[in-house]
Length: 399
Image (cartoon, rainbow, N blue to C red; front, side, top):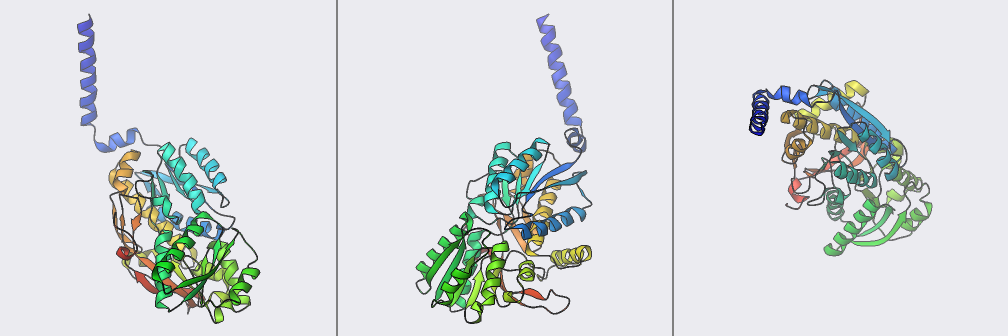
């Protein structure tokens, strides 16, 4: 009796295995496919980085629309949530969406929120795509298996700042730093680079709270210093507020104002004419002349009647890359997605070639630097003129 039972179970097992082997891949894929591809999209739509989140959403939605709204044959659905530029709401809202079956996390904007979401992604073994947060620790070596960044690191942007400071012949720098871990780290990096260089001196630094609305005391100290350069380690509404108030007293008339992510067309529009002549790192720019970017800019302008910002471009570029890789796997297995993405290369990125580094899940890419100038029609009234393109090998250490 026992032998007959074991033989029967063996036949059932081998029959099932044979059937499984015989099934075509699309049928296997369909067997565990959800009804929709759900994205937990946790961005800042309010708070210090609210300007950024809204533009990211426009780029992300266009990336989905331009691929017919589907991946692996299933509709893509965003579940948008505002983290208010705070880590706790980010985690709370993402946890709820993951419990509802989200297939990935997109976000956040602020690095503190992104790192909090990274811990959640690691715990739940859910992919996280980062297209704007710049803190270097997000993509540290041998870090989270499930997190990927397709945009700049703060470290590469600070390197661009330093290269500009030297090329512009600036010798004395006064910095203002948002009191936030990522920007504090950026200040320390710039300080170390100046000390190592020996020809550039930081003559003063002030920390300002995130969301600061009054820089008058700091600006007065800068105006009374012998600094020939002002480095602003802040972005979003904080950067806009500082440049506005600096413009009111003409701080930029005899000093060069610069920052890692201080200006683009979105920020310049919010800042006004005080932005003219300000130098900044740029995550992405619509003026890059290649086929992929030209097509994207045309589609974005048709959709929104405006040129895409850095944040819209990066969101579009990163998600398009991610969806294409998933499509190529022809699988709903998360581990297969992760393995494929960490070994992928995006030859037709909006910024040229991007290569995902398996050692840290950071995309190696060029760095863009420019200044705000008056734009001629059809350009925005205040636009970024790209003055430097730094090659990837000058910005990233080898794995």
